[in-house]
Length: 298
Image (cartoon, rainbow, N blue to C red; front, side):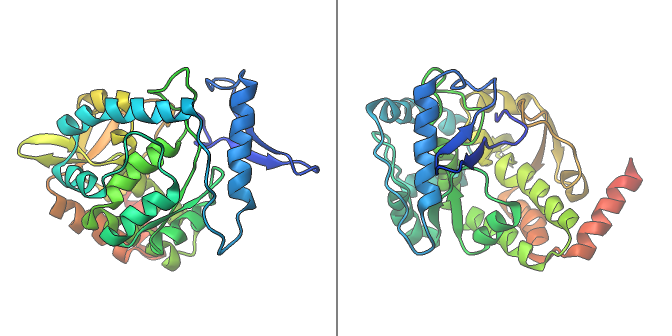
């Protein structure tokens, strides 16, 4: 579950070059000056990076290493219970460390031989078209900070645990990686902001919060579910509907709560055919037609 209407906290730089991450009042770290300063330092490292520069190395503290170890240990048995077998196989192939926070370069070194994907650092929010254009180049923009230590099993925004344990393991699957890349390449064909948002919303209900039927059981593959300790206990109780691109691209959703509506593919092949096929072919005309059909059906 991600809380905060902007999903990522805003990052600004003042006239003196000081970087500040603007946490919401309901953020666990809002009243913690040390955490706020740490977030600013990590964001500054990403902002200072120029094209062609290596991804900045973060010297994680013992406390941050402990958060990674704890969350890795707590998520592992839930993955075994709730994750789709394709995600589990990809997770095993990637072999992320559980004893330390991996540098993004380490994630890339493990991921590239599997699917050709790599990671680069981001201070927080990346503009929508830029984010998807990079996906089309098999590049994932990732934050490098960790959640506040007072609530290690909860994050109000995507942190490196979500970006790497959720998306990294997913991207280690050639099949999930291909769907994600297709979503990125779609951005190259889309001119209207409405069409781009339609694709992003389908992405939300698939790559972020998607589920698949497997051996008669609903399993998760979405990074937003599989990086969330609480969401994994709740997702099967939700309103689970068949894949419907019209609704997936237009349904309003609240990012401050567990997702109440999920869309289930009946198999991985079904997901590839419907969602992957959509990402591979969508243009402005198709997105507009699907939006119109969704409005007419209301």
